[in-house]
Amino acid sequence: MSAAPNFAYDAYGHLAKIGLIYMHSSVVMENEMWAMAAPGVSVHTARIHLPKVTAQGIGAMMESPQLEEAARLISGAPIDVLCFGGTSASFLHGTKWDKALIAKMVDWAPGVPVTTASTASLAALAEVGSGKVALATPYVDEVHERAIRFLEENGHAVVKSSNLRISEDHALAEVPLDRIFELVRSVDHPDATAFFVSCTNFRSVAVIAALEEALGRPVVSAVQASFWHSLVLAGVKGAQPGYGRLMEGRLAASGRSVDGDPQLSGHTTP
Image (cartoon, rainbow, N blue to C red):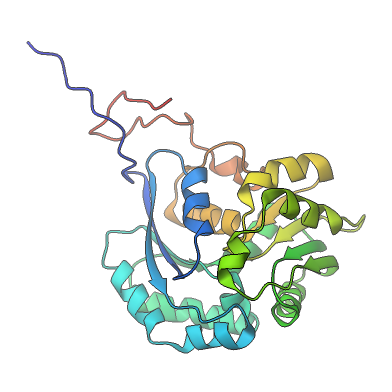
């Protein structure tokens, strides 16, 4: 009798398939979600056009028929949860705007649990027991001020904040990690119970653990929160260790093990 064949790991989402609606010019969120994902969790993206990272450009994107088309197309795949991956786009006009977007996504993707980067961020801040927060963003002033308003109307007074005033999407993704680390440290304040890093095309997850060690309090980023909330809605534990306190309750039981995939029984990755 011949031995069973040894199959290579293929990253198939047997635990959860996350559907993501994301900006056409952005490159950070997908790879950060994949970095945080334990075997068995996969990410599948539909893209929409973002003219510019300003209130006017974001508004034009959200009013485009591409948004509905993207939601309907990605929900045609066998996804377990759908996330709108734009933080500023979902908080642009406040909490009612974000809730209205959720309602539209529910209509466009019937039967699929949905979230947005903003909804996920509020859920994540609640999960880590946050009250007052310190805020770091790469946004232009107008969008940064709307981020503050969104947080404060949801019970999170912003005690200190800083922003990089970047208006081009490609430039957001090019900010180096050491500058991001220092930006977050620069908003440290004794009254802050947590730190929030907004923008899904702004690198964050690689520095979260180091920031939490340096600052002694939880650090939540929009990408980290979106991935965490997607796992919550899908009802799975599918996160890798090393990405902050928020993920502690969603860590996969066996790290890189792919046990549970009926086609890769017993196979593990390094």
